[in-house]
Image (cartoon, rainbow, N blue to C red; front, side, top):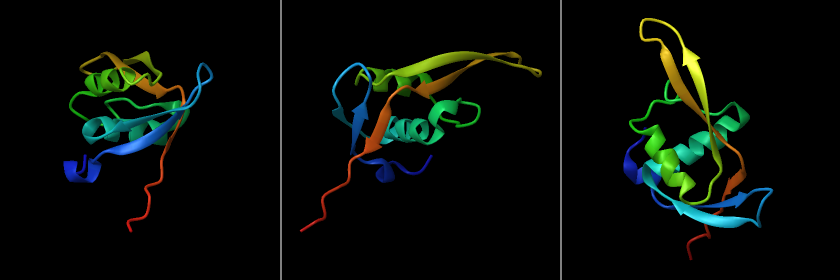
Length: 102
């Protein structure tokens, strides 16, 4: 994950089937997480493929902003077999363009 100053506040437009478009502003690791989800599209993200300290916490924060993020539980094998989460963004989210500085 890049240094925090690269992840300052940014505005995003959220479009869902259930309600009119709305704007959110996120920063830091929540912004990083949202951008990972946007890039991943329908395949979603897992902490295995996109390492970060607290995926579940970042997704929780995004959900408090009314972002629909689905959690899919998947099995994994190997010496530490078990389950992990795959997070999938269920909305169209685009970053707002910043106004040019005058």
